[in-house]
Amino acid sequence: MPRYRMLYTKEGPARYISHLDLLRAFDRASRRAGLPMAFTQGFNPHPKIAFAAPLGVGTAGEAEFADLELTGDVPAESVASVLSGAMPEGLRLIEVRPVPDQFPALMALVERATYRAEAKLNRPVSTEEMDSAIAAFLSMPEILVQRKNKAGEKKKVDIRPGIFAMSGRLDDDIMIIEAELKTGSNGNIRIEEVLAAFEENVHLPVQGGFVLYRTGLFTAGEKGKKTLW
Image (cartoon, rainbow, N blue to C red; front, top):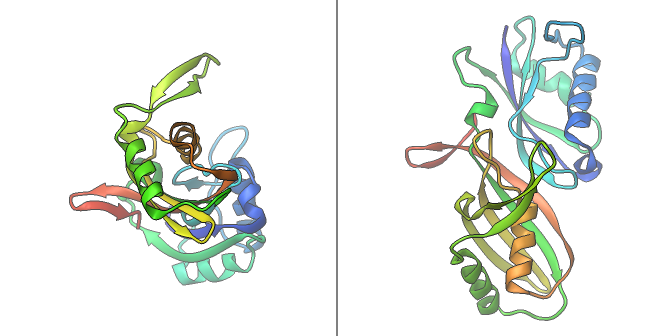
């Protein structure tokens, strides 16, 4: 069955919907668009829509990917046109491309994600102070966070190996942190736990919480990260 890769944004009110609600939103939009959707087999069939990596509730996505399977061939431009008009507020389709049969599934490809986090500061902070705080954080031999396993038991996990890059800049009283993190089925580092550990260890004067954006999803190539197209 033909497969189509969709590049889309998740912003505004849509940033607060869960991963399950996101699937339902794409399902409803595809039905309204009249696309010949493919479904799983079994007692409770589901539309064949697969996302690259779940996005945390409240985090906006600026370059998200999902695969859609149809039962018949439809030009990718037509899929993009009819689906764009059926998407709910906050979900915006950027581009649709056909995916070759032998091309790996999204979840098998994605390995890295880039993020931007913005927070208001309680007092003026110099670029030197911010850079020094980030350098000190990244120089830590291990960064331990507490997680729960499937049995509900708490354990400590070192997330430092999964923080590939982190930098910052200032815009008046707003601190902007950018990070590249491990993600995907072979390990996942959440931006929320990175920022919580950062605040705990460096004590910069952040007022309230961070506003979060995932800015890209990538696979690893021979010369660094590559897009999922």
